Image (tube, rainbow, N blue to C red; front, side):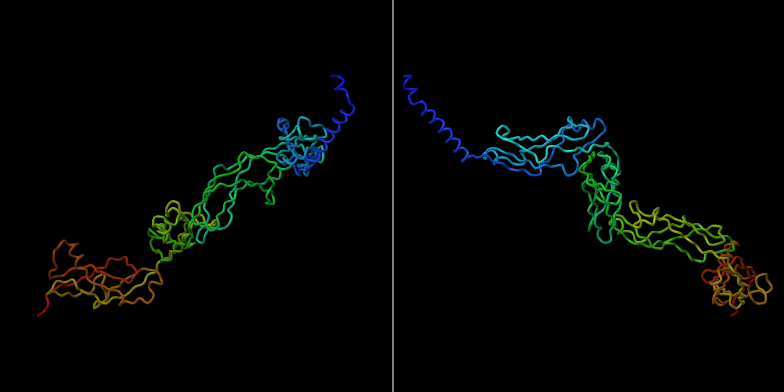
Length: 430
């Protein structure tokens, strides 16, 4: 049996070797070694907390954040890999004085079947600097313009400040934090959620990829208010100093204002009226000036549509010194319309109020109120009703009596004297 196994041994060994060679050739033809390059694989930095504990932060220097990796192995393996299977990392535990770290490449698939994984370069430099923290107020920045006849009112946000941390060189560039709200064409209130955007001192948007914020988005509610232009009307109370009079010139500046609020509220407002109690000219002897806030007399929720106008209007009431003028009313112009039927009256001359067949009417008023006024514009009559009231009698009888005069002056004029005349009442002659 042994002789059979060793018979032609050399030929048998050669046959086995030849079979192995044939198998290797076939395998290499069917599943050859292949290399593929995966471009721009992101380099992960591990154990960054070791820097944070020292109040430091480290990032790979610009331009080295990604690396091309060449992977070699059997075609059947390589062709089943993708960029997502390749990981490249550096570890802060290995950081040296030169701040360089060695790249480590791994695969989460076929790791034992890959011949090699070679990065384009094997070391990166870490930019290590102070970790800085700041806090910024969040501003709301409208984008676009609301519909015609509408303006933007107040806004409310879910949080009004954001905490930011990162490399000092980047943090020092942060000037403001804003969220943008699209208001273009809006005619009603807006509610939205918007991301926080950081800006530098020139108003340019900053790359915040190296920064951390305690929140990413903010909820905002933006008022959109209807506007309307209305008149300002003013009433006046009180009487000036004796001998002075308001001339009717009431000047309000501004006389028209533009207000803003809910359309349903503004639709019911045509003007704002300043009440007389707010403008009291009692005892004044010259033009009276005051300031009034009109929003005290408008519904709640109505506000100014103009940033420059806060609600105060200036009110000026013109006050002038009165003048006096005497008018002669002759007896034959005084009427006795109030006499009972069958009686007539005649004025008895020589009394205090009636001299030389006339009564002197002293009127007071402003100069322009006397313009074109003549004696015939003044109506004078014996006031029998007042006479009976003063003397507690029920009717006028024949006899001599002193009767008050009822004087009707043109509009705006007044008189201070209570005039009386002496008359004789008698029966009509038949």
